[in-house]
Length: 412
Figure 1 (cartoon, helix red, strand yellow):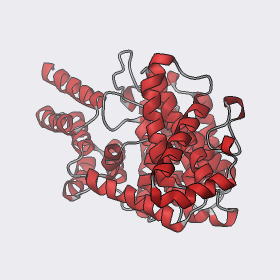
Figure 2 (cartoon, rainbow, N blue to C red):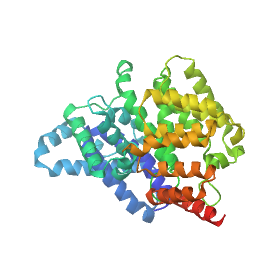
Figure 3 (spheres, one colour):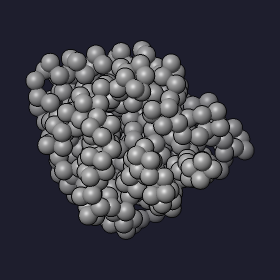
Figure 4 (cartoon, rainbow, N blue to C red):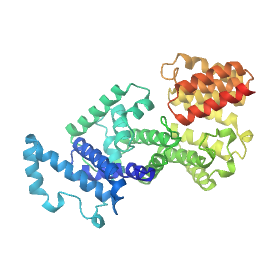
């Protein structure tokens, strides 16, 4: 299967799942059927070609598989009869491609459904990353720094909660959206991050994931334009994605922020992101996504790396750290302090993170310490931490970048 076909399947998966859930109502059974349809496409499309309307094809296959499941289980005979009575026979499969239903943004409805208040926050986020983001259980576990078995249990519990709570496939009314929006934004943030910097495997990035996260964030912003955190997350995504053309070299190698050719950055996207930040900041309450977007805006508005307003970034990180106990934020704060106030101060801020179980074994902690030691001229110590980081990362591009750093330092 070509990479284009794989990307298409990933983009269509949440839309197809939404359409099937909307029609049949059983989230768990619908997800199983859609997964079978995606598997069928992965085998059939390379041989017979991508159908004229791939979305309708997947809906039709998933619907047939779901119908087969219903018919094969005696315990669901009553439901099968109900479906037969309520739905005309010709609607038991998807309509022809030119009549495929597009009543609403099924992926957005699916997003709110998976983030329903009836689910616990960890379970809702895990389920949505799988159903909407298309991430594997392994990838989701890695994002949350928990064992894969733990994450599988969360996803299973979330499916059961949706079934037992009889959560409908509709957007919540305006007055109830605030109950789910926190989980919705967290999920979109994680999906975007996985797309922008893939946590494992050979790919540096998965544009399909980050693009879908931005698309859904725009849709959420249209629903709740007055919400500063929705605006902040959309701005953060846009401002970060604006750097994408410069973050890899001709051979796909990673180019760190301070070495990027900023003439390649998308200035139109930067202008849009900065405007979103400015408007949201004038609205009053400031949350974590808006603060992160403000930090991204400071980076993006610097014409050169040496023009970066590091004291302002430090100040923003300090406010951000006051909102939540997040070790990754603390790590980024240490980098900003090192750039604004001196390497020694930045290195000192890393010491508490060595005792934090959430990050002490993460490759980024070792990599940041290595970079700061390199900047301070302690090459031998830096090499040791670069080697630790290379051993710990599960991303091939990250490992290649770190190994190249090691080789260059040794040559010098």
